[in-house]
Amino acid sequence: MTVRKAWIWATVAVGSALSFVMLLVIGVYLVAGNLAGGVGRGAVQLARNTVPAEYVSLVEEWGDLCGAINPALLAAQLYQESGFNPNAKSPAQAQGIAQFIPGTWATHGIDANGDGVADVWDPRDAIPSAASYDCKLASYVKDAPGDPTENMLAAYNAGAYAVIRYQGVPPYRETQNYVKTITTLEESFAAPRQRVDPSKQAAGAIYFAQKKLGTPYLWGGNGTPEQSGRFDCSGLTKAAYESVGITLPRVANDQYNAGPHPKRSELLPGDLVFFSHDPNDSRAIHHVGIYVGGGYMIDAPRTGAVIRFDPIDTSDYFGATRVTEDGAKALPTSV
Image (cartoon, rainbow, N blue to C red; front, side):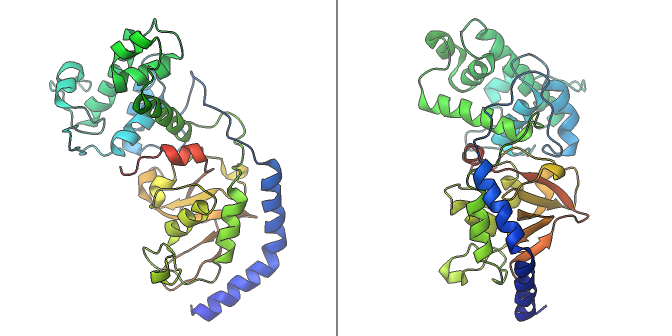
């Protein structure tokens, strides 16, 4: 398709849908509010497709090992530590999907799969070991006042003695940030149990994307002057939310974790919508767009095309994310 023909198509789409879209955008402004704080404890289920399929049963089983953790919290820790990469290794020698350092693994690693070896590189051992370690830490600080989960996370970061000494989360910025990061990420891995409020910035992100309609696609494009203002799919969504003060990761599969996940029937303008060739793995996401209502999104589809309106109900539709400022801030810079 030529750029001119694509632009004509986009212009027609704008003419037929713009008034409807703008009504929806205005509606976002009118009803926008902050995400309800926290997912609560107990009976927390994983949101669909947030954890790679081969690890779901492990996370669901071991995430209920004790009252201080749940499957969504355990998933958030694994994502923050390694991005679910069983071969991850840090400069500090942290190893595997749960990023145990050798000394901690020697004490707390367990042979959960019963093959006779506690293997830090085997998720069948490492994921249960992470849950077991969390629960041991929770038991060490069980008498400290405050939220047991937050105290456990603080003990994970600063040590149980610090939590006991300060009778709760200690006044260390790094520790307080870690607790907030994991509990915020928890929301993006938990199946919503109530209405998910729209983000205040959603309408502004749509406005930014609408101004880019007709712009030619560029693989790796971030919209810089050197790139003639061109974008790829995740470059467009990143720039759209950056225009309203929210910084998203660069790639689509990490953007999926920037907030809770509304169902298809609950989509609102400004939600990010994602597409994958693997219906069970968010790490396999290959495309993202910004939902505008009526079953359509604005997206940068592919080389040779332009930024345009496209339908979202395709065979590879994966799911959606309602971006929140805290959710975006909690995402690791690299996983």
